[in-house]
Length: 140
Image (cartoon, rainbow, N blue to C red):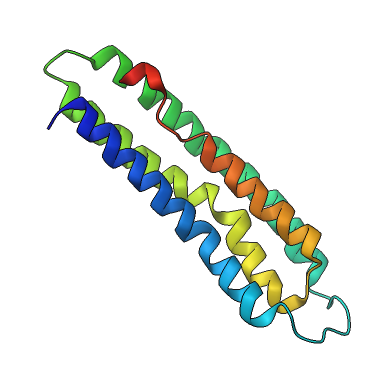
């Protein structure tokens, strides 16, 4: 498989993860977010705080991903390149899970009637974290 094909597959995996991260929140907001809410419940603020705190879970996987990127750049045009691509993809899959936590917690917070602005902030934080895991152009 060529380097371009691997990059294309990794780009498609990134878009797929974006859909899997934001999809539950969008679906739940569509079906349950428009109802008559009497106001945020007792669980709204703890869920928002948990969503914000879950961004810090992404720190360790990001370090692993960054080291994997550096190893990938060193392995370009060597016999170790295919193994380095596989390692990079595996490390990125783990990091995707950590990056998606704020949006998934926001999806749970829909049931606690968390304010739409807070839901949007949690979703945006997941998008920003996922953006960190795009494959840089230097690896093309």
